Image (tube, rainbow, N blue to C red; front, side, top):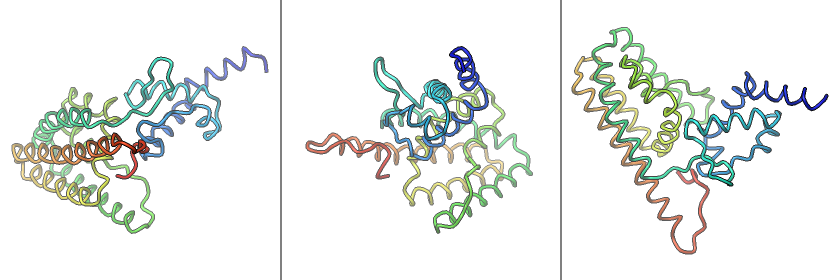
Amino acid sequence: MDESAETFINREDAQGPLADAVFQQVLDAIYQGRLAPGSVINEVALAQEFGVSRGPVREAVRRLQGIQLVTREPYQKARVVSLSAESALELFQMRMALEGVACSLATQRMSDEEVAQLLAELEQDRQRQLRKDRGESSGPRVFDFHERIVRASGNNRIIHALCEDLYHLLRVYRRHSGTVLERKEDAYAEHWQILRAIKSRDAELAESLMRSHIERAARHLFTHLADRDETDAAPGRGRRAAGTGT
């Protein structure tokens, strides 16, 4: 194969379905912590792992930079975004404001059937998590309570702010806010209370519960990240792999 033909194929790979598949695989690795916050993105190793050329991997990394999950300083290798306490606090403060309003709007706009369906899906997700905790096969998680509430608000600007590009970064932070079992239990109870307020058509209470729910998650995550940073900065201690020990 001549060089021009190979270049054409690589360009097609980087812009077509293969690039989309590689992007999703790298994104899942970040979500699951296999590519830890702060870790270097090794394009050659990823290309070998996925059995593709570097073109689709390079395009995936470029797209991940666009949604703020990967950073690249001049003359430096690309890295998964590092999680900082200050950045987490800013993101969760924004969520408190926008998701609070979204919850109020959803209370007014959701039909009884939609509320009942969301309650059923919340319980199904709870059962899936219990099976996972017992080491049983639970299947991939496809339910996102917060995304469902935001989309149910019907406010396109709020949906754009929270469910498009920024959604991926928020999801990484949210994953770290819920890694402790006690927080998982609390989060489920808080989700149920929010839905109960929505079912009762109490928009003010639903908004207040959502804001309180996010504020508690923010405090949990901020404390976790601040403690981690203090440990990493302690004299004589090497920096831990980001995203571990949660």
